[in-house]
Image 1 (cartoon, protein in one colour):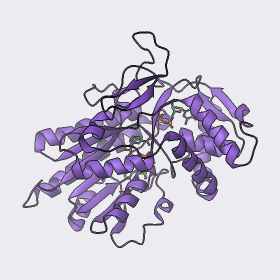
Image 2 (spheres, helix red, strand yellow; image 1 turned 45 degrees about the vertical axis):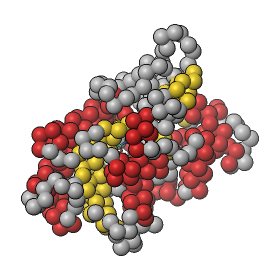
Image 3 (cartoon, helix red, strand yellow; image 1 turned 90 degrees about the vertical axis):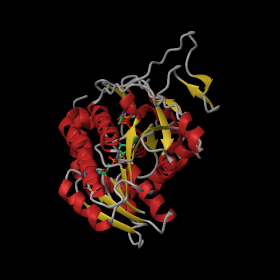
Image 4 (cartoon, helix red, strand yellow; image 1 turned 180 degrees about the vertical axis):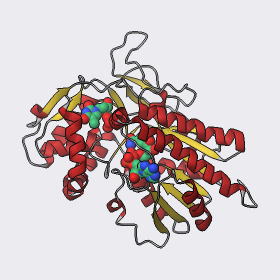
Length: 376
Ligand code: NAD
Ligand code: TYD
């Protein structure tokens, strides 16, 4: 197959590109990325010389450019990750999110439609796989009808026992209720992808994944930002009381799920991806402090006083919790790492790759960062 991966220079994208380039030497992998602040080709140094890999700097909104590229490379599969991805940025600048996430996805769909419909075999053997987020479902409550105090142990329909902070979970049937400009834009793009299946018969798949963590994540997101700050003994800006719950998945497990679903997922279906791994923000922050301190040979917990409670994020979703039973049951995917192992690997990676962090936290980003937190 000739596969176009969009957003391959970003956090999740580089792991997907690496997996596909290494696992499928018979495929041609074309990585299309605009290289915004979040795209970094240094993330792909280890694959850039591989014969089955090619990078193209392009904006997904460039319909003509994408069309020409698809024709030139005979693209028959698309894995679409390119997006603006940070909720705080979407609060400050929603236009960019509508432009890239909605208009960019539409432009990509139109280009794929025009190219594939011009081919004799039309949509046969083609696939448009759209990567989305669980944030489109909105926020879940932290209550239990019988008044049981969270977290409590429960059992998913896939049979897995796990800790939960409420009795409701995001399933594929849930209606969309996005709250942030980021999730509203992602929800809209999901609807466009499904509309292209329903209207034109394009073979599409949508997946909605929980929060990812791991190497190469831009240090504006909670986990890499805090690891970097702990190392440099800078304040850790915990929004509100740190009580919000997120469901965390190691990024390579997401990439493996994408591989499984791209090859074996059913057209027109939606799959939720997650590892039944809910954590309160404040508890993660404490794990990060203890891990960084231990690995740097500081007394464990010595940096707890860096925790700084700041004004809450506007419209901050209380709890995300994905039920990935369908994916586990139907396609046999399951996460390979326990959270404790994943966090240990992740902290070690950032401590060992300070040069990467320094590179991405240079000038422009620092201005943005200062601007953002000075208000608090
Ligand atoms: P990221 O911000 O790290 O990377 C986004 C990439 O897209 C960058 O390389 C950027 O240069 C590129 N890009 C942005 N605008 C572009 C444009 N107009 N044209 C071409 N390329 C463009 O994001 P990420 O965390 O890797 O997320 C990737 C995808 O996965 C997104 O669609 C996101 O919504 C989804 N997702 C992310 C998470 C998460 O926890 N990070 C969870 C679920 C789903
Ligand atoms: P983030 O990594 O931005 O992912 P998302 O908003 O997509 O879930 O944030 C994860 C959680 O951490 C979220 O509840 C917001 C919180 N948070 C902070 O408390 N402080 C911070 O500086 C950041 C970036 C996030």
